[in-house]
Image 1: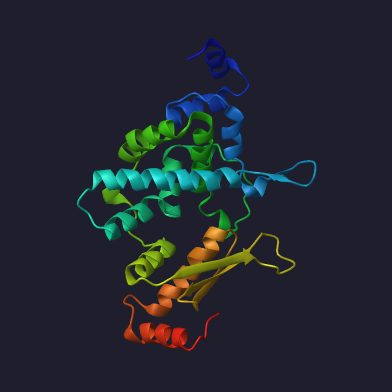
Image 2 (image 1 turned 45 degrees about the vertical axis):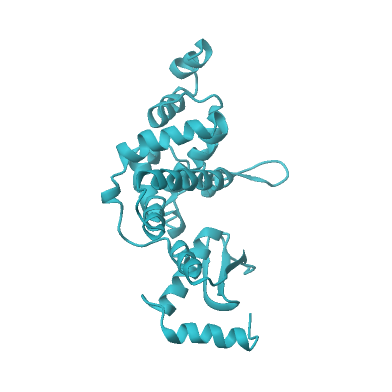
Length: 260
């Protein structure tokens, strides 16, 4: 560790953050501002010149993609004889909002997050969202290989028992996509901002189409949440097992060109 970084960590104005991130990831930040930004929830956004809101949403988006890639690689190697379905469901449980929120609290991230408590349900998993944003910050600061080692060698084996991963199926989108892939049926999510006026929180609406047929819809404060709700409504319509009636309905509408 360089003398300058050591001095910042021990005595600088950001020593609290340097120590916290070193404790969480085992690495001293090169660009601590990235990590500090990762802790700023949308509810505490800062407006800058030009009207842009500064918060952790972009880092969360990046961290979500990096985390899913690393977990997929880990499970593929760790379980060489398991089926695609097992790998998909296990990954979904690991990266679910519930699992990540619990992990963030075990790591003490909940004590660092900057947010305005409103009681809004959209904040239910904000600590897990900030963990994803921190992973995005670590990726930008240290690179993919460092993030990969941190997640595989520390976070997963030391802080998450795969046998104890919450069993509740919460990744409805992955479950629905998996079924469509196995059934060789095209699936599409059409998601856009909700134009309803007078809402304090940003909102999105999503429709899920299978074979061009709308089978579900949902709303959420993020695109991810709206698509999960749309997938959930589709799965509830279909039931635990896809019935012959639903399949016949797809085929009938497809043949008659009744597509949405």
